Length: 378
Ligand code: F6P
Picture 1: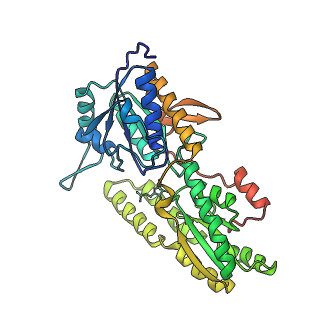
Picture 2: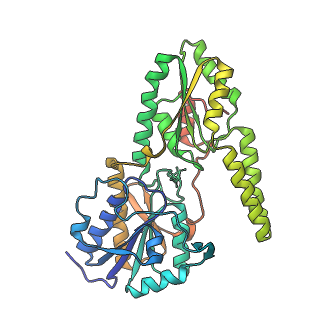
Picture 3: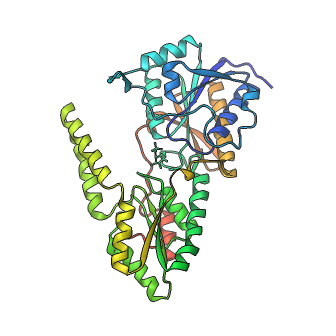
């Protein structure tokens, strides 16, 4: 039943890398906003790009039907940054344009579905006076202040199945198979899938590894009669030396005082990151030399982000979407809707923007894995 509300016109967009559950969240928010609170809803195309270029469609109940189970996002997405817009090779701040478009459409609020980068964009719009609510999505599960994010459960299912499946082929050929899983900063997905898929070694960015330690775990298995091993390795995992180089390059960016020094430090960081990109293949060669077992690499890539969301993500996205509609109806803005246990809580965006939730090296999942004999390469 529609109830009287002062918030009548709301915009919504999806930004950052796509993630299973985005459509479920659009639907969850939209059905509650339109059906329960009597609002009108406008969907901006391709993340903040649509907001800057004023490209949107009206989302009515019919448009929201049948999308709960659909992967990707019906609105499209991008990783564009609202304050750093490239126009003919020049960088411009488009926040004033976004404010104009928001006002011209007569919006009362804007709902943004995204990860850490989106939270930063959202904070800039809040600072410019817009009424914004953020919903946490990412397969990486690395957003601060929320128990979890939608997309993570689905990606965990997919990566777990992959780790499961490589077991039989590794076993048949007496090989080491390294399964590279997404997550360039946080290792949650690799850790979850590695544990659930029974990987023998789990390598994540938060725990630097040495080749010797990984090889020791594999050799110990050989001695016990297991002539194969499965390694779940995060795309951002690094050995001890690479970690030191990477952290030193990051520090240079942080301490750079002038724009020129910052540019040079960023270029150096990009170079370090580039040189470390093929690390799974290098590790496979090193393990082959250290153990005498043939090694192979499987990079899971975008299958982890594509396709239908699992039941847990559909449930989470619907809960967060409906909770966001309530917040918008109450005029509670400048917040992210965090998942906490079975409930949700609004958290100030300033507590989320620019932060990354990493795996604490003594996290319960890590400790449980160590107790069942999983190696972390440290
Ligand atoms: O943030 C989600 C994520 O899938 C990361 O795990 C991965 O490192 C990154 O996006 C890849 O981004 P893109 O698709 O833009 O290359």
